[in-house]
Image 1 (cartoon, rainbow, N blue to C red):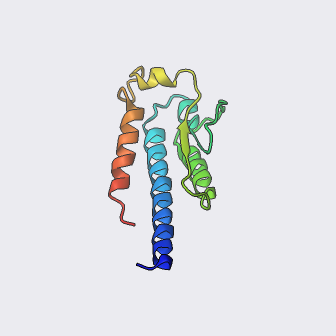
Image 2 (tube, rainbow, N blue to C red):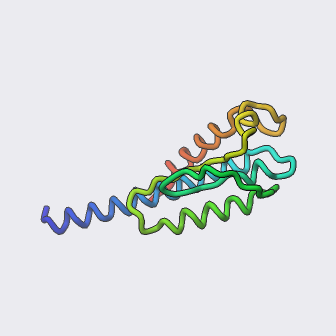
Length: 129
């Protein structure tokens, strides 16, 4: 194998890894957002995706459908397109999100966040690059 060929393979592999990271993050976020119980939509609207460092502030977005949260996540993920091996964070800073995840609401099962992560990872496994 020539040196040029090995560089080509490395570049292709880097692109594939980055693509899988972006798709997986999007699927995880989408699953978690849509599984979050809704009253006013504050919990669902609180999910934020960031790249490089977690967001540590709360937002006051009411998003009953989850579409705004998902679109914002998509924009963040797409904007990181040139970053090699990006690190993404999916986070809610609502103080009661852990209680919701523990099963406080009848609208969502306990551990809906963990289940959303698992579904996102499984969904990403089925993607052909």
